[in-house]
Every structure is written in structure tokens, then in C-alpha cells.
Length: 164
Image 1 (cartoon, helix red, strand yellow):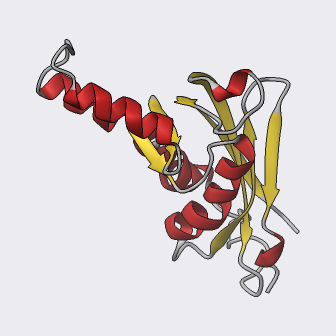
Image 2 (cartoon, helix red, strand yellow):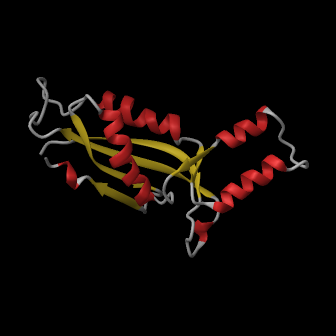
Image 3 (cartoon, one colour):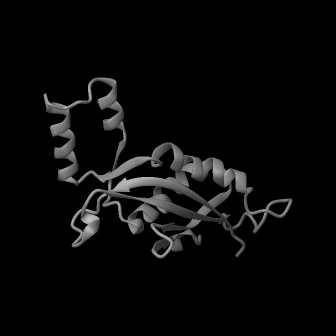
């Protein structure tokens, strides 16, 4: 199997609901995400000039998705009642300093995700939800995503279901 991998760096905040230590607090990371792609089985191993996919297509389809959706945002689980309460309190507070457009910018900076935003579940979401959507029609599939939270800590998801 021949693969092509490109990485992308982005910054985001999160809170791991139910974590027993510091990660239960609001905090952030400078993430590095590695996207590994291959040709869809039956279409060959490489294109006519010898590539799985041009690296600029990975950038356009996957890295730019991160930039537009998660970079400089706060990822919050839809089940995170603390974050919902914080935003509700901020929106309803007569004491808040932010008004109008400033509050909208604050509110828009929270991205509600359907999972607890651990590196493992972020990688799974990118592999099985975003990858197929973004790579549709390219003849290529996302088979692995590795997310580094720090230089020492990473989580990977491999799409073993991609073998057809």
C-alpha cells in the first residue's frame, strides 16, 4: 500500500469533561494533525504521474477544513453543561463588558462537537466524518489521522474499515 501524508498545525482550546486531573479545566494546545491518504482500493496505487494525491489537495481539502472550523476556536462537547452554563450566564449578564458584535465573536468562537474533545475522539471524527466528506470525488480516502497535543503526546485512528 502506498500512502501520502501531510501534517497541519492549528491552535484550539478545549476541556475534557469528566477528566480526573488538569484537563478538566479550560485550556488549549498547539495541535499537529497528520493526515494519511491512499487511493481507494480498485483504483490503483498511484495516479498517472505517480502520486496517491497531490499534497496541495490534502491541504485544500483537509488542512483548510481545520483552519476554517477549528483553528483558534474552543471545542466543546454538546454534552458539556458547564460550557453551556458559562455561555448562557455571559449572554444574560447585565454586568458583562462585551456588547453586541463583541459578544457574537465570543459566542462564535465556541465549536460544539458531538463528542468529548479528546485527541482520540477528535482523530476519530476527522477520520470517519470529515475525511469522507472532504475527499468525496477525489478517488482517495483518509486512512489514518494522528493528532499531537504536545510533542510528547499523540493519539491515532486508523480506518481499518477502508479495505473494501
